[in-house]
Length: 83
Image (cartoon, rainbow, N blue to C red; front, side, top):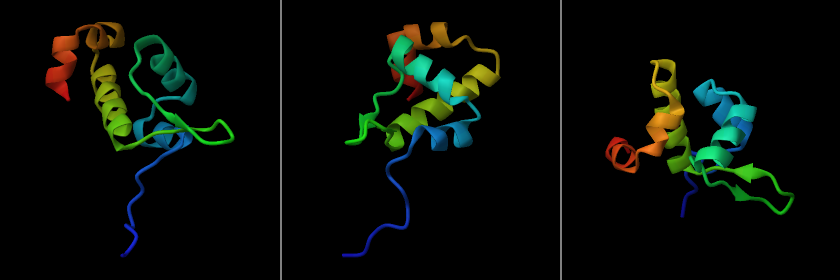
């Protein structure tokens, strides 16, 4: 079986680089809104999967285009329809 050349787990610095959202802000959104649910390594480093990356990219896009994160993420029906 061949290993995939694509990554399936990312560290917070990767998410920061891909999304343009600072790591501090990602951690706040994670805690405040439950936007992301990272797994932790044995050394307590957050790792994120493709779904978390996709969610963050969507929210970062909306945020850059004037949508308030608190409003966007507080509406469960709206959030479910976006992703």
